Amino acid sequence: MKPKTIAFLLLLALPAAASARLGDTEKELVKRFGPATERRKETTFAYGKDVEFGDRLVFKQGDWIVESVVVDGRCAWESYTKAGDWNEKQLLLVLTTNAQGARWTELTDFDKREQERDWRREDGGTAHWQAKGPMVVVHPAYDRAKARAEAKAKADEARLPKI
Image (cartoon, rainbow, N blue to C red; front, top):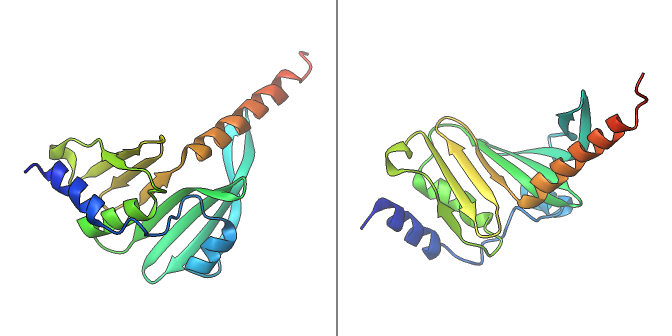
């Protein structure tokens, strides 16, 4: 059996009832992780200025650091950083807890899996992991909010007088 198939079957075998992280409210995130250790605005740089479009919360849980971006009241982006190397079980745990009822498909070529991996959800959500780095999961709502912020910056720029 191919390793991709084995990983997919393992993913399906994990409990489907695992609670989601993406889609959680700030209150649910605090209940799960405890109080945020840091809070700042999520911004994108567009047309010469930083444009805000969400709130970034940082949580610490043991030797894990979880950064969550809340957009329109729901978590739309998460980064998981941990001490030491990642193992397959940890990768699958992050994917499963961020599935929101959708199925993840791995996009990575087998020969590149030791250094970085990518997944896509049926609804367009994405996950990316790099060796020695974080695992980032993104809901399409994050990309939409970022695009709206950039479009607003463009519209604001267009309203400036042409001197």
